[in-house]
Image (cartoon, rainbow, N blue to C red; front, side, top):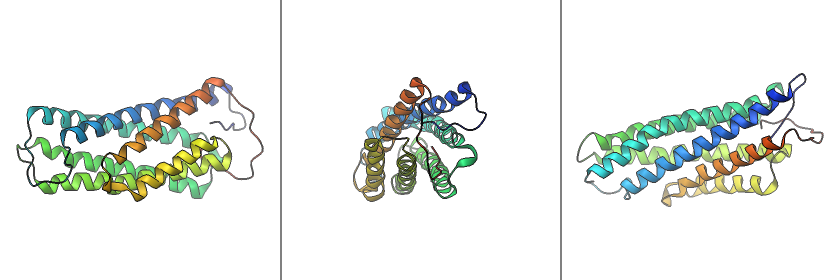
Length: 222
């Protein structure tokens, strides 16, 4: 994923996609691990009036709560590196959707994590706290993740910087997150999987070095 600006050095040009790729991998691994830990420790999700919090459950949720802030930081770095890649030539409409959905996703993710921390506060955490955490994650955060996947895939398709299968995969992930949402357990895992696949592709392209790009008639974000 490359776009050279006038006067940019080859070394500076290579650093941006590598930073985006590594940050995306870190985000995908951390968020995926946090989701697995919480889903495994609390398989009933928001359901049930009572949940017995044993030592294993407490440790799993605590580990997830501590992972998510680092996942959010990595995601912001991932967004920033991709946005920097366009410089002054970005498409303002897509840039607004890309940036807005990404920031709201991180805010909702942090809010859901803070609410999930109520599991650690008592042996019988309140049902409201669990319901709020899962609703914020699966309904709101993942809807914003869907918009982010849509925007990134649209940009990649418009500029021709992503292969068609990868763009199609992004649209499919966005559709799953937008339509399925909280109705199917574990569906939120498709977002970190998509981020991981996209990041690995970015790293592979960066490793190959600068590639000639065809003339473009519209500007984008990636």
